[in-house]
Amino acid sequence: MPASNDSLDRRDFLKTVGVAGATLGAARSAWAAKSSGKTGRVIGANDRINVGVIGCGGRGPYVANYFARVGRENNACQIVAVCDVYEKRKREQAEHFKVKGYLDYRELLAQPDLDAVIVATPDHWHAKMALDAMDQGKDVYLEKPMVHTNDEARLLVNTVKETKRVLQVGSQTTSADIWWKAKKAIADGMIGQMLMSQGSYHRNSFEGEWNWDIDKDAGPEGKGDNFIDWNMWLGSAFKLAPRRPFDADRFFRFRKYWDYSGGIATDLFYHVVAPLNICWDAPQFPTKVMATGGIYVYKDGREVPDTFHLLAEYAKGHSLVLSSSMANDQHIPGTIRGHAGTIVMVDHGQFERMVPHITVIPQLANKPGAPRGTPPQPIGGDEYAAKFGTKEIQIPIDQKDPMIAHIENFLACMRTREKPHLDAETGARAMVVINLAVQSYREGRTLYWDEKKWKSSDKPVKA
Image 1 (cartoon, rainbow, N blue to C red):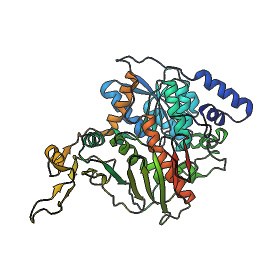
Image 2 (image 1 turned 60 degrees about the vertical axis):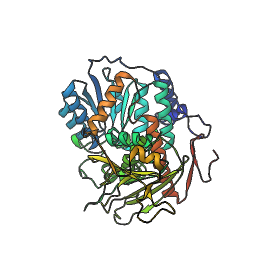
Image 3 (image 1 turned 90 degrees about the horizontal axis):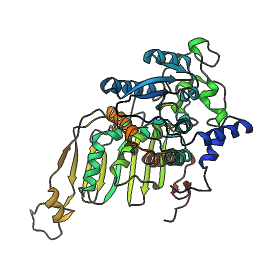
């Protein structure tokens, strides 16, 4: 991806997120420059990969337990360290895995036997932790969403290239067999020219999405297990989020606030846009994005909408349509429409649930002047009919747990140094359309994407 004077380059970003103060900021930049390009340990075929976990809320332990399960089954990896700014979470996970626990992720990265890290923190920390890990020669399993801003996405793409580290974005859905079978079907011509991809992510509950339990005694003044390093969590010293007094709702329910999350778009749409990019003939940037929605039901002080819709256009002549609400759980089938056929990948509409098969539906129509009673003919013509027939085709899907498949793919790529299923470049293309949708919603305007300059515009960009 071409560099641009209109956006942050990596050196500028490292200065920006360095420790506050000009002297320490310069020292951070010098350290980063010196550290950049570390190759890490050469991992042999029989070596166990040592993994550290940064972020021990709900998602971090969930993913770490899967890594540990894979390690138990084939001796491929083991958890060797954990980190969280909340003492209780750090202690519990350190005891669970019987490993060292840290409050500061930089101490975890300095652990000499570490090969890779799982980053499962709030979104605003993803880029910095991934950059620091790669600078220290570590590979990265980076939970979705990939980053918090599009500038950060570009920096991660460039840094993966510079450091030659393996980075897998943790949207495990992309390792499900569904998307790879759909990709082959499209490449084989089963839908002809692609026109539109559609999907949704709907939920409903009495509590309202992201209203997770709050530990009322926990905070920066808490003693023992109740201590939270609020200043580190905010990342204000690194200019990651505005400084503000401790707010338990923001800490425990961070996805409700723009400073740390993009709400529905970044939490849930990432699981839809990333696998669709796998299906398409190549991961793509959007050219035009718009979004709408609002806080229709859960007026509980949240900033992000509880109902959100995204519409995007792509240069190759197709559109993306996504729908979501946290106040209604009726899904829309995950579908890719083409002129000659349609693929229904997720008939129940829940992108993270397995399906036994995908369905290809030929597009049929009556030819002008055909005698009465003549069956509809395939829009794709005689060649299409000869190759695929005129009836629905069900393509069976392997039922392997996509979480296991995603982790195994990451670990295998750590050994071979190949690109994983959801590499930085594919992940960035999904991230851009999502972040543009958030920006469109917040600013109330349609946005256009300039791929060469890596920035948004309010006017169409010439090819």
